[in-house]
Image 1 (cartoon, rainbow, N blue to C red):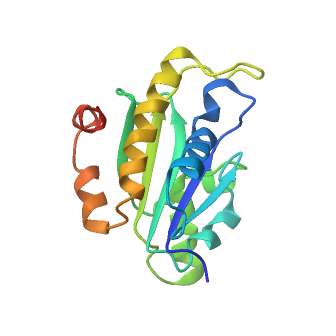
Image 2 (spheres, rainbow, N blue to C red):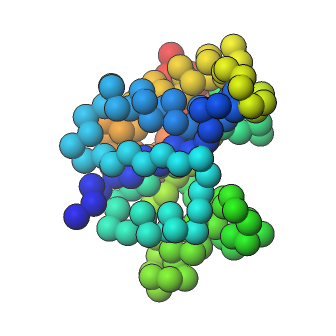
Length: 169
């Protein structure tokens, strides 16, 4: 039986700030109680990852994003068929849509923790800005994972990015 909480970080450790998702997983492995949390990492989301959502109470996807106005953003995910389901790299919303299609049921509550990123060049390390964003995102994720309660997560998702960052300090 899978653990009730899935923490899924994706990105490439060899591509600069794209490493943010997997690096947050490393933080969770050393700072969080993993009795109820399963950690999964991959370079990108694939159609097969829809099956990883089965029998979960909560799912947290973690990824680098150039679209974050703040250090990180935390949002509720809804199933959505977008064009990514026909490519080799899917969006989290498309993974939820695939789950819904193949299982004929609503996916578990899923959330996305996006961490501000700038550089994705092969062979680069993290940018200084991404390192700072990672520290803030790890602090926030630690609080989330220590309280795997849907209502708590939903309240956090309703806060704006600036309010979220302030809570981690």
